[in-house]
Length: 88
Image (cartoon, rainbow, N blue to C red; front, top):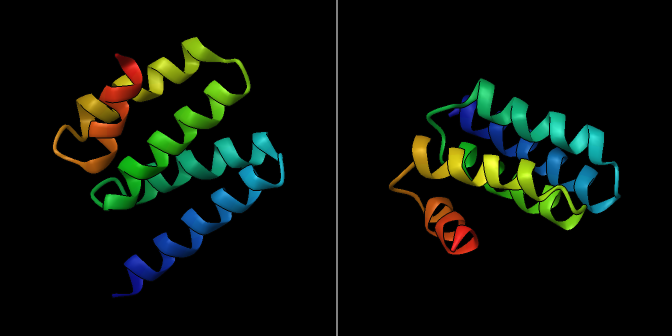
């Protein structure tokens, strides 16, 4: 499906920004995946990756907010399991 292809490209772009240390762009790109494809499995993963990126930058309160959002909005997902582990 076209939509899944687009979400894959946008998710990969977010990962690339994050890997390059372009955090403002990465944050926006991860959130865009969630906004545009809220029912895609990529959405929960994007929120989790955003949380991890924030944590890595020492922004733990913001990271916690993202992890809690993953568990609330996507409770039955691999990302939620990872987020719950992080929150413990």
